Image 1 (cartoon, rainbow, N blue to C red):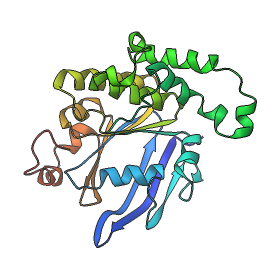
Image 2 (tube, one colour):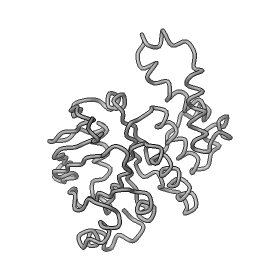
Image 3 (tube, one colour):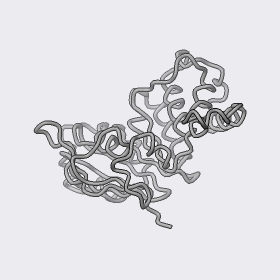
Image 4 (cartoon, rainbow, N blue to C red):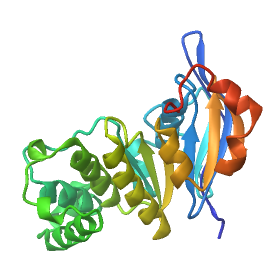
Length: 253
């Protein structure tokens, strides 16, 4: 069995006359925590959108395992093992924290009308949601409505909903955005723990200090192209990476 769970080959995407992604090839290995960084406008979010099917490439391909999924919808890619968290958290505000996570846990059983007919209870989903909330130290908030949670716990809820999809690869789009230093460190520690449990993670994040602390490998983008790929300690010493960050500030990635 291949250890490459997610791969892109020569992806290109332009918006009008602006090239956002320029011939980008990435491979995500089983069990790694890949940090995807770069200065503002480097193309990080576009890459995530191309990998998950939110946007389609002008050219190039995306593979999940050995399968070409370039033409598949986001929903079908989720069924094949991808899950994505969004920077702006959008839970279902009419449902409790537990219900939000249980609903995500039941997506495989209720994704079609026929499947729903044979799915009578949600006990299994509630059990799964309780396990996930415990893992993220959120069980005490299971009965809360999302609008009562501070931002740090809303970020955990977003992560819990993604974990409920039972992904092979979890893509995190700026999960630390808006958090203070303490909140960022706590959430980063949870990301480390999830990876240590065997979950493969791709992390896009502007908090460079935390990315350097948690990532097992770094991939750096600049102007839509990959300019460095390797261990965090080695990548940050490269002159081209330092040049890309001139004027960006130490906290931006």
